[in-house]
Image 1 (cartoon, rainbow, N blue to C red):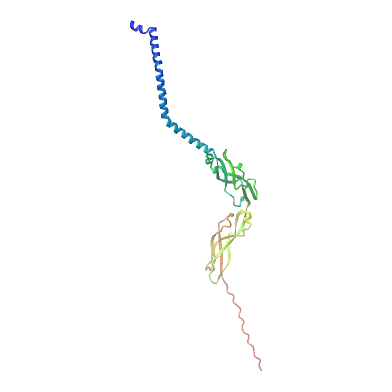
Image 2 (spheres, one colour):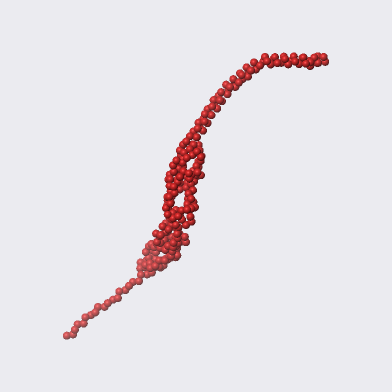
Length: 271
């Protein structure tokens, strides 16, 4: 008990603390040298990784810098014609696409979808006649940091006409010849006329609508057949029917007889 109590005396505790402090102070330089050595070895091991990281960083910088550099590309942007008033139509050939030349960062340009740049031209205020629409860069919704430098074509000419309807006579197309001694005396179509609709300037020149061929070869009586109507013009359309009933009346040729005149005998006078 006395020995245990002597170890717990304050003087003894202080003595142990001083001894531990001295040992720690003596060992500090060695610990510091070990730490520095460890750091050096770790640095040598990480040198390769640091080189790889440096190369990757340079490559990333190059890609980003290249993507930000200005380049020029061409895009075919679709055109849309909207809100044309009822009763009107465009009768001339007009472009469905317009080509734009756009400048900006390479990466940004590569992400542009031409279909999303579709230019919708509003024709609500147009009337019959020729209209010229001028195209400008601000009409296209392109991303920021990009600039449209050229538009081809830079203007569009539209020829607008009024749509009208008119009833046009039907003409039956006949081929072949009736039998010998017979002839076609009448040709009829039912209905006799059809309604055609389209631009007024083209409809004004249509005089009749033809049918497919009605063959009367070797006919001795009437020929009746359903016939299709032939297209009038690609810009015109039939509004009523696509087929008509054709009737060809065939009759025998009547032979005309010439009246006979007898010879008159001359009477001789009696002497």
